[in-house]
Length: 139
Image (cartoon, rainbow, N blue to C red; front, top):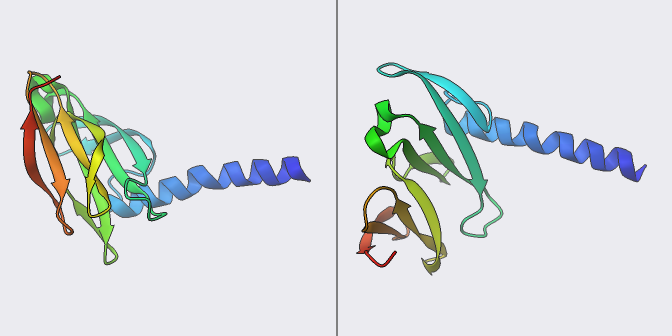
């Protein structure tokens, strides 16, 4: 019985994740990894990280899109989707990677956008959205 319950639980988790991804992306993406068709760039590979960044028991969605067409020499483009008042809101959608920092504001962690170069912007939550807080050149 324990084995059956465990197998059933783990088969539900990916299905829940796929439903969440499809809802947040308005059907453009429906799995944690895959490809979608971009009007200008054609087939784009992506991966999704579901992370509860503010410890409210709800997942936020980091979307990482790969390729130079959308992101130039950086090679990847990120977005963070946060659900507020039943609506998914885009926070970034620009070239780079991300690193969640220990510092936080109003329950959300600061996020550093990583990429090429030596200085990186750090974004901070203001209660409604992330904004450019400062930059660091200490890496």
